[in-house]
Amino acid sequence: MNDLDIPILRKSYDLYKEFYNLRLTIPKQDRYVLWQKCENTLITVLEGILLASQQSKIEKLPTLERTSVKLNFLKLCVRLLKDVKAINSKTYIAIEAELDEIGKMLGGWIKSTKER
Image: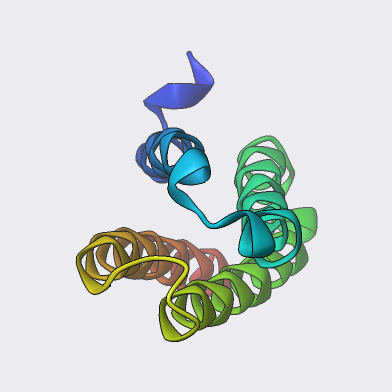
């Protein structure tokens, strides 16, 4: 099985590709601190999802919960990018929609892991 067959990993991977393409549109003053923090956090979320997909049930839940916290932090940072006008509202809405969908998938995974 290919790792990208996991829907939440595919979604996160695709979001990172979009993020990557936006890099040069970010003002230089924001690119190396706030944008970089967002990008690094998104990579951490990707890493957490991949790690959880390969862990035993006992190890999986703490990893998913840590990844969920990172995802919430990423949402906060993206909102901050919009508020300091490093990204426009249209871009923010598109990224936020993707983050919300990933959050729902992650929440469902956490819930199903707790129920087992």
